[in-house]
Amino acid sequence: MTKNGFWHRAYDLYYEGFRNMTLGKTLWAVILIKLFIIFAILKIFFFPNYIDEHASDENKSDFVANELIERAPG
Amino acid sequence: MTNLLLSIDAGTIDWSRAQFALTAIYHWLFVPLTLGLAVIMGIAETLYYKKRTDFWKKTAQFWQRLFGVNFAMGVATGIILEFEFGTNWSNYSWFVGDIFGAPLAVEGIVAFFMESTFVAVMFFGWKKVSAGFHLTSTWLTGLGATISAWWILVANAWMQYPVGCTFNPDTMRNEMTSFFDVALSPFAIDKFFHTVISSWIIGAVFVIAVSCWYLLQKRHICLAVQSIKIAVVVGLFAALGAGATGHKSGQTIAKVQPMKLAAMEALYEGGNEMGLKIVEGIEIPYGLSLMATNTLDGYVPGIDNLLNGYITADGKVEPSAEEKIQRGKLAIQALADYRKAKAENADEATLDALLATLNRNYEYFGYGYVKDRNDLVPSVPINFWAFRAMVGLGCLFILFFGLVFILIFDIPFISMVFRRLLSAFGLLPETASDQTTPADAIPNWLCWTAVLMVPLAYIASESGWLVAEFGRQPWTIQDMLPTWAAVSDLQSSSVMITFFLFLILFTTMLAVEISILIKQIKKGPEL
Image 1: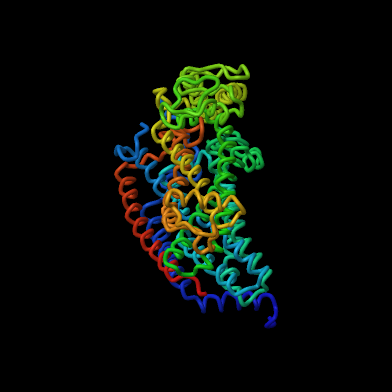
Image 2 (image 1 turned 90 degrees about the vertical axis):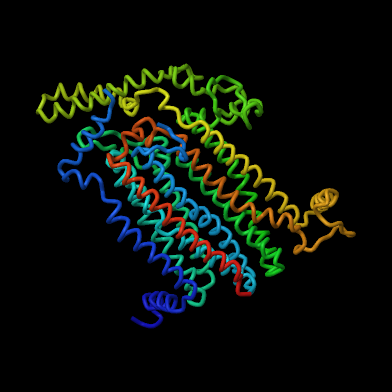
């Protein structure tokens, strides 16, 4: 990989960019905290996939069919 | 069933709706500023590219810095909506996943990667790439965000006008039959242009407000004046464009969601030559017929007409609510019978007959879930006032941008006339020469008005979404699946808990993030 090659320059752009961040460090901290809260806490503890919890892969269409048919007023 | 948010009952359906509304409103605080600021920072950098002055470079970098703060604030706020699909709206997710998933997948793979790649070049590449490549990257960042918006709006447009699909009773899923019917539906095209152009209003208002604040502080005068000049041109174009695209959207809604239009107008008894209400008792003659049909005497059905059935302008008979409900019940029963027959290995003829009944009545499938015809009517107060808030503020923005344009650009004769008029009312100091410097072109009261325009722009923008989503109620997918069929059978208490969890979490995050933005505005450009 030569210093003037595309991949070296691309790497250098990101490396130098991240290294010299000022406001960016704060913003990345905000983003990472937000992503942690969303994926590690909210998704796991508060947002399971409802159908995955109530039906196996083979039975999902039956489960939804039952839900939709049973909810129709008689 | 259709409770106003503030008087929501503890039912699962309403808490799930409230939670989705809260998270969608929160998400939509950031997206329009991203779309709008992208245009302005692109223009600012284009001017740097042409003039190669340090002033324009710093100006472009300043607005890009604020873009970056807003971008970081908005990151991942949309993902929570996808979580809610899987948890709170599981029947909906399964029912439409094959349609909905495609635009969201394209959005994630193409648009997000494009946006995130070029935003890195935009921030990191000032000393690393050529001016031309950097400028291209800035514009492609905005284009990436706009393409993202396209695909999300295609998904939402499909909920309003489900086309390009067929229902598979074996998998219980709607399957896409035409990608282009979905991606290029007239509803999607109208929604895209109207939503994106109205987002440019927010970008323009924001830039003018920040710039006016600098004028009041007597700081960064040159940046403020030049930025106002860019933003007011974008804003005026966008405000007029939003009006034009809104008019087009009105015609599409009249065709495919007439109940939404009737609710927006609090129109119970329709007719020809219908006026457009400003408020009850005051109306623009022929305005509603013009908005809905592009003719002065076009027929516009009211809520009662839609519930009782009526004959359309081209002679087609629109069935009554009861007829639609009956056909919906036939469709659902045919589905149940088909699945039972299939499980029992019935013969092909039996299955074909049941499928034929299902397909014949599938157009009204969702109506089979309706017990009371009044459940088909969305909230009239919310739609009526949200629509008026959006349009009224849209008109205000046209006046605001128009006035700022006339004052900041010294247009021969016209600007002088306006300055004299404002002087006559004591709104501008008299000047002997009828000339004013650009720095003094915007009087203090108009600068403070510009700052006030920021929350008003957000109110207009969110009001538009209230009309779009509340107007579609009770449907999650128009005519296909009402909310009470679409929602997961969760305990209402668990949904309520997550609603308040989000309220606290988002308010805290919003406060933190706004403080970062205000700090950067106070810091100003590095001029």
